[in-house]
Amino acid sequence: MIAYLLFFVLGWLNDSFCQKKWDGGGGDNLWMNALNWSNDTLPSDGDSLLLDNSFVNSNYSVVLPDGIENITVLGIRIQPTLAFNIQLGVPANNTAVPALSISGQPGLCLERGAVFLNGSGASSGTVLAVTDSIIIMNGARFIQN
Image (cartoon, rainbow, N blue to C red; front, side, top):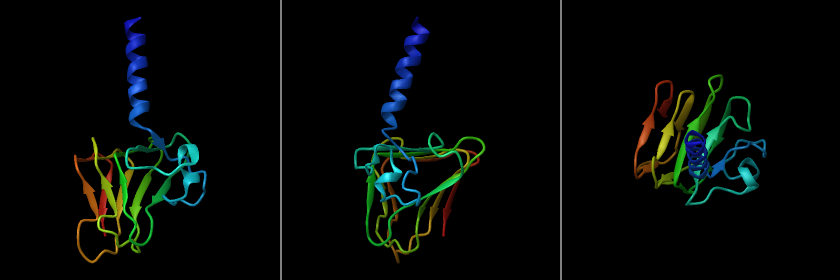
């Protein structure tokens, strides 16, 4: 009974941490297309995000917006299944400083098969602002172009 209760509580905590997931419903890999997110709504400042293979059973990329748009979220965990890779990228035509702000815990967590690609076109400044931490596990990559 206690094991069942513990399993339920841990599952509930995990679901509440990962408030929003990528489902790829928009079919274009663009962060700013609400159809690509669970519940067809864009992430907001208070959302913790999970990019995994719950909905998309293949490799995929998520591309932050062009221009000077700043994205702010509470946390991002990129957690591909063993067979796949998931990439989150700042495109060259994004010149926002910062382009991505992560304000909560654990910050940015890259698990095996995850790639964060900073291809920002900003001439100077901090493109990625993380308040807590960046965790890069074995088999994950953080690439600065």
